[in-house]
Structures are given as structure tokens and as C-alpha cells.
Image (cartoon, rainbow, N blue to C red; front, side):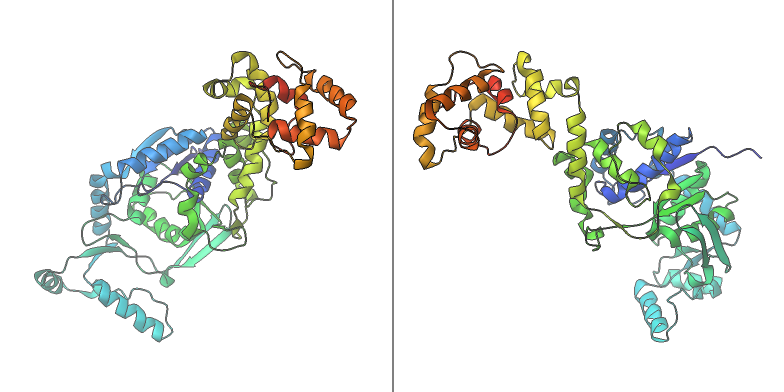
Length: 444
């Protein structure tokens, strides 16, 4: 038997910007495809025409491009409605689709009654018993019909790539609604049709989709398709284990980007978070691909702390060669002959690239001197001893030696007040490297 080609997909709904939870799904599917020389599809699940926006579709693509998660093709569910209606007719003909007329209020009353009787709130299939006359009467009363898929009441089993063997009793699940009364095709149905038509062979998604997977397996089989392999990753929690879902809006990729998080830092964390492998900064996308193993992930809730992104960002930034940041440095107005020296000093003292601006402002404009009252006369005398002309790599040692001889100060009492007076900072880069970058002579 010929092995199926590896085809994965990331299927966001363009009803908002994607966040770290979405990224985890996208990245896992991307890495599986690339590791197996397969196909990675970006599928926009935009059947909800009211909430889907072009700006969100564009934003999703921009975020993925920023991260380097390139797709092989784009699919849009909004262009496939005819195919969904055709598949619905196929399921009707097979006796697996049935029309229902209960209102949301009536369904809610049924669920409450079942719960009061300590029974699972599973749809009772009352609409299966409706005669054609009763259906016609419901329509005459102005009720719009919606469509459910009739599950085979047997166990649905599959070997999950993360969770392990899963077995769900279909009798414990309501027959899923696949087409709403207003005609909207719902996610469960559209995704099933697409995954079969597009030959998707592996799907990684969140653990909150396990029940969906069970019903979709039967839907796919009813259409004569072969379901893909599935893996359900754990859901993210906050650093203290708190529910994160309500906060994900503040963790959108564009917000993290605006905070200066580097793509490789974000990818490195998400490619290992929740797995048995340690989180470490990858040097390239190929490193992430080579080191990815879906079987290394666990099913327990996974703690995510956005603060963990900044040490990784810092390490990545500090590893960058000058050519990678040359344009950004030039845009700050740093003279070309100082670019290398500036980058050499600044990179060891920044976390995000945006911090470069503050360092160049210090070198360009000078700092507000920080001088203790008891050091004021000392600093005046020291500044008077600054060598004339352009400062060089030896200026600091020459200057401090002259100040030492003139004032008798040495050690911390010599160097610390001078640093504070020149930079306004109590710590920082070597002063021998700082002085040649100063565009103005220090003064009180």
C-alpha cells in the first residue's frame, strides 16, 4: 500500500487576529508538513459571513509571514458553499442527515429536564420521528428547519498522536447540527468536507476539539473518505495555572510583535512548550523542523508566560551580526563609521531591537548627569581634565588616570561617579567603548 502524502492545514476563522494559542496549532501543523516534505495549507474558515473580515484575513497572513510560516496554498471556505450543499445532499441520500425544528428555548428546556433527571444532556432525536405532514406543519407555522447528522451509536476510536488511544461512545454525544436554520454551514461539517477533499492526512489541534474529532470521523466515513491522523495538544494556561483563554486577546501575535518579541524567540518557545524537550533558542527554522517530535508532547495543561519570550528574544538579538541590523541602525542616524562600534556596545545591553533608539539618543544627545552633592566639585574638576579632540578607545584610561592623579580618588569612588555623570546610569557597557561614541562632550 502506498503511504499517504503528508498534508496538514491551519484553519483559522478570520473573525479576529491570531494569538499564541492559534500559533501553537499553526506551528505544529507547519513543522509536521515540512519535516515530511509535505504540503501545508492555509485554510480560511470564513463561512460566518457576518463576522469574517478581510482585515483579519490579511492580518493572519501578515502574522504568519512575519514568523516565516509559509504556506503552499490558500483555501477559502466561502468559495466552497456549492460543494458543502452537494455533500449535504449526499448525506441526505444516505439517510444520515435529518431536519429538525425545535427552537433554542425548546432545546434548552430538554437539556434542563435531562440534567434534573441526572441524565446526560444529549439530543433525544425527536425530529427523526416526525412525519412529512408534521414537517410541513412546522414550516407552515414559520419554523425554519436545521440539519443534524445522525451518528452511528457505537464507539468512535482513534490513536491520538499526543493523548494516545481515545475511545468515545457516540451515544454520549448529541447528533451535531451541521447546517443552521438560516442556512449557515457550520465548522464541523465544512471542515470535514474540506479535509476529505483536500487530502489532509494529519491534523493537530487543541484538546477542546476531541469531541468534534469523534463526530467528524463519522461524517468523513459517511462521505466515503478516510479520516486523517489526529493529535490534540494541551490547552495553554497562565503562569500560575489559571485559565488563559479569556486573556488570549492580549496575547495576539501583533501585540507581541509590537512589544519587540523576535519571531525565532516565539517559535522556539512554542515548538517545545509542553514537550519533554527543553526550551532553547533555535538558530533557524530548519533547526526547529529537524528537532520537532509530536510524540514528545504531553496532554497536561501547559503553562505559558509571555515573560519567557524576552530572555529568548534577548539571546536572539545578541546573536545577530551587524548586516542583519544595519538598516535599522542607519535609520537611527548613526554615522556609517560608527555603526559597528555602536552595535558592539548596544547589543549586549538591549532586550529588544527597539531599545537601540534609547542608546543612540544617549550617545547622540548626551545624558542628564547624575551627580551626588558631595561629588559635584569632583565631577567639575574631572570634566575639566577631559582630553581635547575626538575621544578614542584609550580616552577612558587616559582620563581616569589623570583624574586619579589630580584628586587622589581611585577604585569605586573614582569610576562610579564618572560613569553616572557621563551616562546617567549606574551600570552598562565598558566606558572605554562608550566615550568614542559620544557625539557631545559631557558637561554639567
